[in-house]
Image (tube, rainbow, N blue to C red; front, side):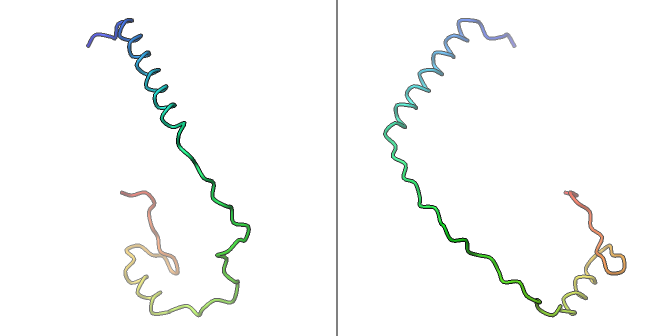
Length: 80
C-alpha cells in the first residue's frame, strides 16, 4: 500500500481546518446553563449495630461456593 503524497496530506489538513472552523461556528450559538450546586450533603446512613446475620443465607452461599476454606469463599479474580 503506497504512502500518502504531500499534496494529499495538505488537502487533508485543509479539510480538517475547515471542519474545525465550521464546527466552532456552529457551537458558538449553543447556550449552556449551569445547574445550581447542592450545598447539603445527603445520602449518608446512620451508623449503628446492624442487623443480625442471616445464618440460612450464609449456609446457602457456602453450599453453592465451589472453593471454600473454613469461613472463607475462595474466588479467582478476572477469569473471563
